Length: 367
Image (cartoon, rainbow, N blue to C red; front, top):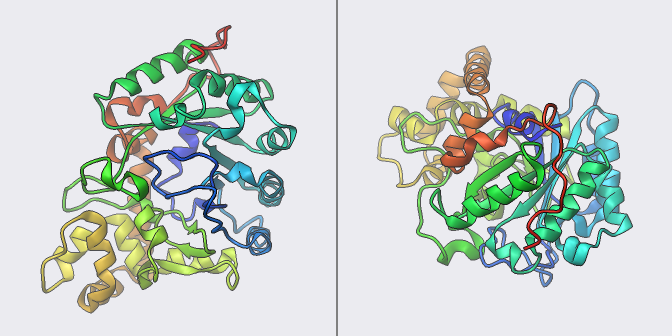
């Protein structure tokens, strides 16, 4: 499974499931949106997670399970077990790692077994990670994963399109792998420890009134086992989760139940189709709060908006609205999604040419 396919599925309601395996992380990056460290132990109950993923069926499953953290490879045996369960039902499995294990060219056997159980492996790279794990070590580890037959990608984060770090890192990945390794380039958001690093800007889609919320497409298992409808870190960490964005808990609910709640919710259908600002403008008797995500969170306190969504997006009409919005975003392609949600200058890098281009020799810059 390549990165373009993974990102391309992002607008599909319940096309994927995001799983935050743990908030623990052995690194201390200043920009960490989750505030992860080894001093925090918040993570879903492993048995609840295994039962939840075990509830997938051949005809009722996400196409993709994406494991994140913190650092999910602190739990390599759990990663391997979850991957096997999901794949048995027909799902594919991807994972994003901060690459803590790659220091000094190491690749522990337990971690390699977990990585080779995946259908896609992504390495997170940025200036903060590189202070703890040199870029050259990361690139050598990615070459080992490629040699094992697992598709890989790099998730780069910088301060914006003119960040010289991004230009340098992109060039280095290209020198090392050619177009064989695609890249997803994002910008630091003011969340978690990054709250004081960058100026607050509206997260999520652009500022237009009609702006579908792709973040509300895939359910996410949060660090305490709560299943939320939105993967924005502000939502994942907020307690209580706004009622219209809470889909359940893995201790009590299975995948078919979560999927039914997501697909059947008129509010989520409208969020995915037109976004929260349009909902406020159409149904609310008072102005929406400033900010894209804040206007979404406020929906739970606007009975007029909830009633309007139920009236117009319930039943078959709502299903068709959801379907039409999804089809439009799929037709636009993964690069269009990254231009809207990530760093537009580098959006084209989400697609690779892995089939046609040979892998260059060498180990990268070794930085």
